[in-house]
Amino acid sequence: MSKGYNFNLKNKKIWVAGHNGMVGKAIVKTLRDRKLNVLTVNKSELDLTNQSKTFNWIKTNKPQAIFIAAAKVGGILTNSLNQSEFLYQNLMIQNNIIRSAAENNVQKLIFLGSSCIYPKEADQPIKEEALLCKPLEETNEGYAIAKIAGLKLCSYLYKEHNKDFITIMPTNLYGPNDNFNLTTSHVLAALINKITYAKKNNKESVEIWGTGKPKRDFLHVNDLADAVYFLAEKYSSSEPINVGSSKEVSIKELAKTIAKLAGWNGTFSFNENMPDGTMLKKLDTTKINNLGWRPKIDIKTGIKETIKEYEKTYSFSDSALVKN
Image (cartoon, rainbow, N blue to C red; front, side, top):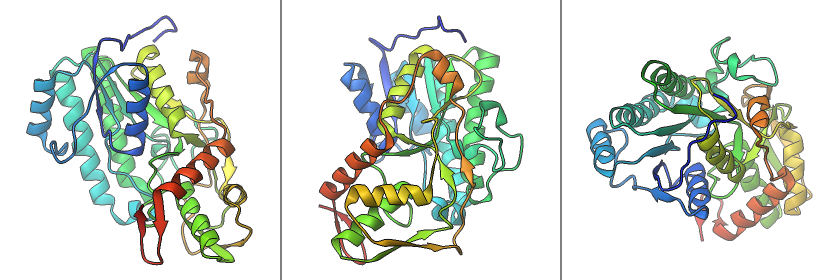
């Protein structure tokens, strides 16, 4: 890989797998804003865990570039309780696409990993070479093992068969089209749900899982989509590359920021019976910064916009979260 590398996405047929998810929607918008030719297929039409159907779809539609945003994802609780499904489904989805892409001479493939597949006790900020150097975080081990397998498959195909298949490692994401369901969401979306509900219903206190002390690196999903587009054209390597904000914030401080932006003045209680996960998780973004990319959306602006979209999109009841 060198700074002089360039893969031009113009006039290419680009398949975004997982286009209905938060990341997939952001990538599709970024590509279409640049007037690029984007292919999509709904889950009801193509089950990505079915090998023969996935192979046939790629063979028939002949994408020249593939962005893999399709995955089974969830927050800390649903991850820890469903390890077998997270392992199996992610292995099937990614392996079917990657192998078929290799056999059908797809020119460029971008596989999305995740910062949570790095070791639990990795040195901070986390460099790409920290992968597999220490044990994984137990609560999402199944998901992590699947993602590591996809990363390694891309790496081996790159080295052994000259396939330009790269892996991008995003940090914690938030933004439009996030999952706000308290059972399956990640922390920032869950806090927006809880705090906005508390404001609307005049609640004086909100419970936060864990101690509130863990620190995280949060990136707006539109910044990730911009980075994915940038790296698709500018990066070629068998090694993964991190994408993050280069900043960290504690869960407690994050909750205070959301409360202030949402206009809620209550207090927080911390349920220390619930797991904290890794105490600090921040990515080293030296590699992508040296290529010339940095995020554009600061966290306060991003959260404010996400709260607005959330309040416009959802209504509340004690038992459910439903779209308006």
